[in-house]
Image 1 (cartoon, rainbow, N blue to C red):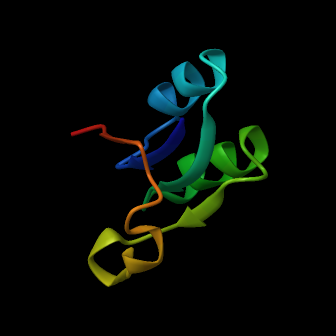
Image 2 (cartoon, rainbow, N blue to C red):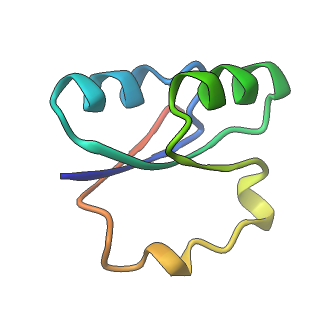
Image 3 (cartoon, rainbow, N blue to C red):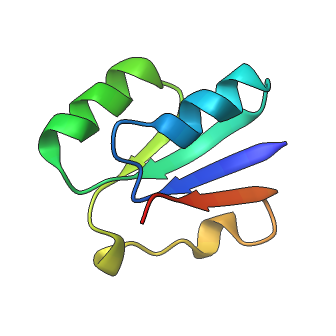
Length: 70
């Protein structure tokens, strides 16, 4: 399964996806501290910042599970 994460925070959904052996394709988090944590924990994932300025069309049809930490 391919996982994408929005409003990722500290990566709770990303960590759960990793435990289930899913691929974490990307995460999107605006907070700089959380961005550093996510980059360190998930270095192979694409990292996005502000969701309002990000174009996710590149992922259309490629993500099986999309989570959001609202």
